[in-house]
Length: 154
Image 1 (cartoon, rainbow, N blue to C red):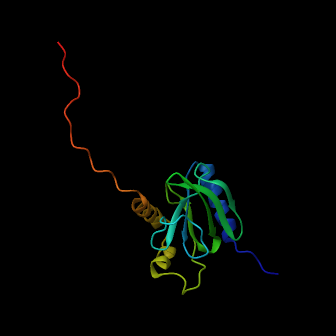
Image 2: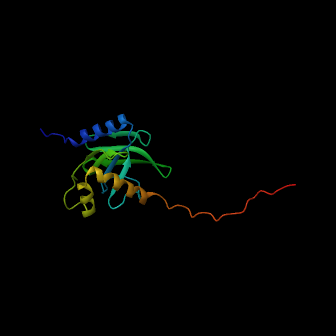
């Protein structure tokens, strides 16, 4: 009889703790051919996702995958993340949570992905902030100042 990994149980526990505490649960995962995420949102072979109840629909955290509906750029997408690809789940507000070693075979992960998986949860908050900055669309250039459109009437 084979045993199921403790990883999906720990992921569900951290997610529940985050929600109970009023924190935003974030999930960091490696992206490969088994991962279904919207194109263009993964950076350097990984993605960080908001798993809060407000940001997801039909969230399922099974023993072998995490699946849910989410909007990216106003468009609904179905996401599927294998549990083996999850490298961390933590609270956005304080970085508390749990990091996991990658379960991908050594040849499957790029060196950057392995380094991210080995980073502590404290470093995941910095990684999340950097990935979010990269994912944000560039700001529109500032408008030149214009004169007032109001006229003085006597």
